[in-house]
Every structure is written in structure tokens, then in C-alpha cells.
Amino acid sequence: MRTLKSLLLLSVAAMIFVPGTAAGQAAFRGLVDRLADDIEDRVIEWRRDLHEHPELSNREFRTSALVAEHLRTLGLEVSTGIAHTGVIGILHGGHPGPVVALRADMDGLPVTERVDVPFASKVRDVYNDQDVGVMHACGHDTHVAMLMGVASTLSRMKDDLRGTVKFIFQPAEEGAPNGEGGGAEMMVEEGVLTDPEVDVIFGLHIDAARDVGKIGYRPGGIMASVDDFQIIVHGKQTHGSRPWGGVDPIVTAAQIINGLQTIVSRQMPLTKNAAVVTIGSIHGGVRSNIIPEKLVMLGTIRALDEEMRQTIHERIRRTAVKSAGARAEVTIPYSSSYPITYNDPDLVRQMLPSLHETAGEKNVELIDALTIAEDFSYFAREVPGLFYFLGGKPLSVSASEAAPHHTPDFFVDESGMKLGVRTLSNLALDYMEMASRQ
Image (cartoon, rainbow, N blue to C red; front, top):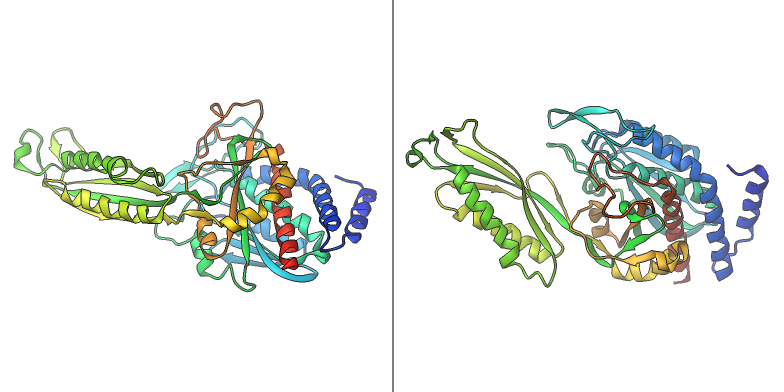
């Protein structure tokens, strides 16, 4: 941590900031760098604490309490219990200006950790009636810790801020438990983007396959929509030695699955955008010599174009219903549905220099669209949004060797989190400054 003398120097730097000038913005950027240096150790401490104590979606009680306490110590206006466990902190600047929202997601996953670190999770909980290990296997612990660091940084600059910052700590990004609402969709429904009304929103995601120090961005659709689906195939039970005495839902399911594969490969304009239809679960029957009465399949749909998304829904229904020999019942979506995560092209163009100046232009990379999904999309559907990826892979590890997200060996190099604090802080500050000139 810095000495009292260095903190006094930071205060002097803040006092010489002159809003609306290039020199003033440079002074602010330098101050952000020094404050991010000061807060880095605490950000890492927060991250390790959160990593050791992960919580499943809509159950982020300890996490939200930690966040709320921190925001209150900074003097922010704090609201809790939003969309079950969400936390909002509002920082009013010393000058009028836009409202900039910054978002972090808080939930862990039903994954048992295998990473050999002192702060590895040993937590167990119940998920879909099963006893499971719980792990921050997607890096949401880093997102929370970084946004707490941003709150600390910007609150130190409160008097000079030309606008308001709304810090959104969101539960259930990985999907609410069956039978419960949650996540970004519920936060929007409960008015998180109003009072005060948000002008723009920024968010990031740690990327375990991207080098530390690198940033990936894309204007337009950066991540796919997601809709899960269920198909129940109803047949007629009979003895396995006499298949002609019944209607076999297993054979019918095989026909449906083969048919589903042609929806993307033969019926979608793939030169326009990517799409995916995957069956991930199939259950039917209990014994080798009994043809069952029904079979249940679960799958996922990913699309980067809204018209293609709706066409896929229609053709899944048509393919399942028209399969011979049994009756198929199709539910889309079954339990979760996120829109395409869309980065407003004008906002990306406006804010790209901020990312360049913070990370270095050579470290900011235009990436291809991804078929993973993010419920940040609900925020960005309401107000202009910019979502980007922050490198979290050690330089000593190749991208092919890095453990994927949502796996027991998922690992993040914590040295990359300081850049997350700096980029989110500077995006907020630079947007406020540009808005003040208009």
C-alpha cells in the first residue's frame, strides 16, 4: 500500500485536474493508474476471499453482504435485495453529467474445483436436488473484486466527476434455479436502469484463454443468444423382443436428432452468421428389454442473428413434430433465454480510444463473435452497451493448454485484474468527459 505522503500527492494531482481539457484528462488517467496500483493488493484479497467462498445463482448472500459493506464504507448510496441478492451502489459526482453504469456478476457454478491454490473452494451445496461442489469456474469472483476496486478508485475522485456512476452487482448470470426469476432480466424489470436513468453501460468478462494485458472487443453482436429447449417424445411401451407391439420413442428420438443437425447445416444462411443446435441430454428407459413410454431430451440453441434465431425455433418444432411414429412435445425456451449480446457500434467507436490509451493499442484486439452467451445482453438491449473481454491467461501457458471456463481446472492470472480496474474506470471517466462537450 502507498504511504500517506504518496496519497497526499494523489490529492494534489486531483486538485490540478481541469475538466474539459486534454491535460485534465491526462491527469485523471494518471491518477487512475496510481489509484489502481494502490488498490491492487486489496482487489486480489477480495478475489481470493470470494473464490474460496463461492455461492450459486440467487444464493449470493455472503457475496452481496461483502459488496454492500464495502460500498457503504465509500459513502455510496446503496440498495440491496434487488433481483433477490443484487446490490446497487450510486456515486454522485461533483458536477452534473450522464449516468454511467458498470456491471459485475456474482454467482459461481456447480463445479468441484481441482486447482491447487491455497484459496481453492471446498464449498458444497445442492443444485437441482444434487449435492455438488461449488466453484467460481467462470471468473465472476474477479469481476466482483475488480468492480469493488473501481468503486474505490472513482469514489476518491468524486468531487471532480462530471456525472453519476451506478455500480451494478448482479446475481444469477449463470441462470436462476428452476422455478425462480433472476439475473439481469429481473434486475431490468425491477428498475435497475432507472432512478437515476442510465445513459450507457459497460461490462467486462475475464478470459482464461487470452493473454494477460490483452483486451478483446467487437462492435455489434459479440455473443450469441441462448435458448434451451426440451423435447418429450411420447411412444407406446412394449417388450423389447416385440418392438412392433408398441411405438419406440428412442428410435424416434434418433430420427429427431439427425433431423435437428440439418437445421443449421442445410437450412441456415451460414454466410450471414453462425448458429448452433446441440442436444446435451437424453434420458429414456430403465431396462434393456423394455421399450419405454417416453423419452426426454434437452438442448441449446445459439444464434447471432435474431431472424435466424426465430427460424431455428420454428424448424425445431417442425422437425420434432413431423418425425414418424410418436408424438413429440417441444418447449422453447425450457428454462433460460438470453438475447444476443450487442455492442452498440457508435459507442464502441466512441470508446475505443479509451481502451487503446489504457491498455496500449497493440493490446486491444478485434475478435470474432462467440457462440457463448451472457445476460449482460438484457442491459444492452435497453441502453447502449459495451462489453469486452479481459485477458486472464498466464503468458507462460498457451491458449490450447489453458483450462476452459466452466471446468474444474479453470485458472486466472490475478495480475491481469489491475487492467480491468483501469479500463472500467477510464471508460466511465472518458464517457463523462465526452458527454460534457456535447
